[in-house]
Image (cartoon, rainbow, N blue to C red):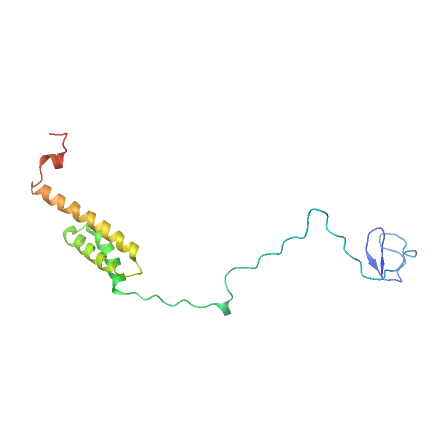
Length: 151
């Protein structure tokens, strides 16, 4: 193998002229394969690519086990729904039902956040409903309903 001194292209030993026009008759044949030049100083070796982390192949896909729902989970959802609906319709019935169902649902482990939300919403609704009933029955003093500065 011969290497053209002008363009660096490799040629067979019997080729006399390079396509770039350089005479290859006086170029000695190479004894081994050409060694690529070292990278410029300061650049170093590029880092290796990180491994691909993505979705596994279809053959490696493992289906998830279905979740088991308990009565506590059902009561949690029922309690929160009843507490929210109690603000708009049948509050005397739905607010206490939502409070009790959310308290029972709090014993479960899956939906504790929703159970706490149902307890808070229902408790505030029960207090507001009691205050409205006492106000309509005129059982609250005037300073409580009108404020202490308005008489």
